[in-house]
Length: 262
Image 1 (cartoon, one colour):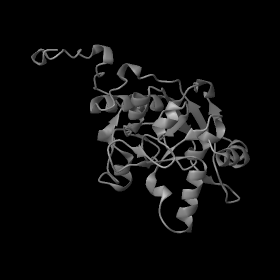
Image 2: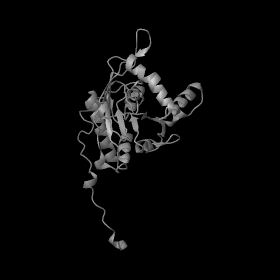
Image 3: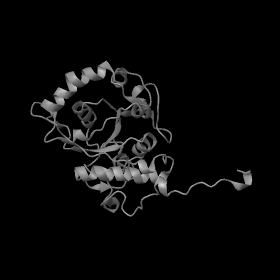
Image 4: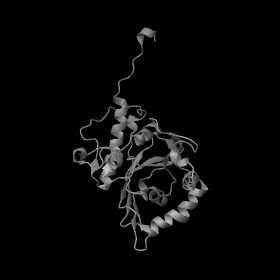
């Protein structure tokens, strides 16, 4: 990771998160050596810096490539900061997110690094847990690295009496690694991608205790479900009623084509 990452983490973010925001960290012993994906619920902007500030391994967050572009002083400062701390730009316009410029998130995992991701794709509009995007499933199935569910609890930024944002009773809980090796290589199977993603969201739900709503949060924030009654979309488990997809060992073995003379 870059020298700027170390500077900002040690000099600014870690002291602020520990002593001002007073965020408590649990489960750090669950982070394995050799790379992993940290998948968390997303309550507020503080989530993005609290987690990497408190754990020792550097964390790379995929960020939409538009944040690395654009004109104007504010946009240029944001772009400089993201590059300085080694974050990875991704293209969200196509199917599989692609990274450029600073190296792909797949390369980070292959090198034994740690990827942080918020599967909901945006902050929760009301504190509930929403349907996850399948990028987290692609990462674990393609890389073979485990997923660690992460709970952000009470990490909302609130205004203190002196007007500076703070948090109250904030905790971050890192769960045990989930190994999806039985489905490794099935990253092009949409059914597997959805099932794996839902299992990750279920583990996050177990840690946070949030209600689960089986729609994308973006639809609730600014789409067709804004101000709608979400009761019909609430599930006890994200994979409720969905069968476990076949593991690799259960898939049929391809037979040689006799017509080809093989």
